[in-house]
Image (tube, rainbow, N blue to C red; front, side, top):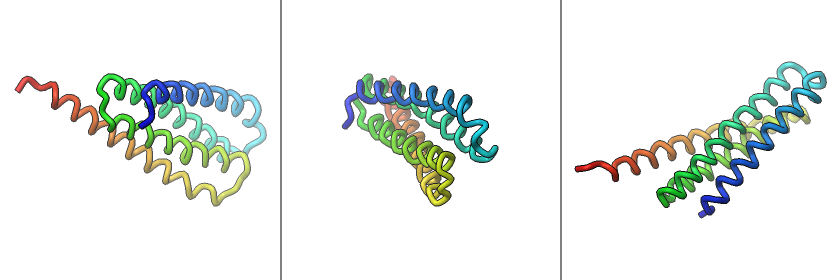
Length: 131
């Protein structure tokens, strides 16, 4: 299991990288890439930021509850960032089309992460019921 503080720090660092990648894209790539490739790049940045923030929350939930499901959630989000956003970055920057086969796997990893998150919240809530 990844320690909760490491999950949160990783989320913060990945958010920082998302901001830097967004700025790089807006200032350096917008004129260099086709509209479609630039949109793919921006999608990678957006999903990285959303899931970096989700990583921070998953780390907090893991810290507060000690439930391993929140560590698994963080792992799924991290894998999703690498596969989804990473493949979109590589596709945009290198125009290597085959790398796009990894993007749906990253999306699936995000979906698994959100499912695990919901399951973890439901399990946590059910333990706090008064009956």
